Image 1 (cartoon, rainbow, N blue to C red):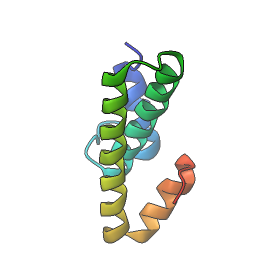
Image 2 (cartoon, rainbow, N blue to C red):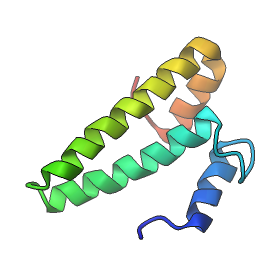
Image 3 (cartoon, rainbow, N blue to C red):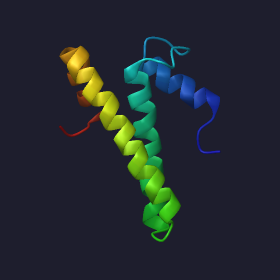
Length: 89
């Protein structure tokens, strides 16, 4: 698999509150960003994989929802995660 539990723990440790805090919005956004980048690379090689394309669109929607939630709750955390991950908007 492209992402094992060690890599997930590193993502959550870097962007979340701790390695075991998988529920924080920042950690989830970082994980979704990693998955989106992976699926984007896959789709560049396999442009007719429509199931993956649909999964990618749904994942981008989930990340956007979390970003919107974070923007409403705490604008400073939102700005920090957007700058840290290099996201637009």
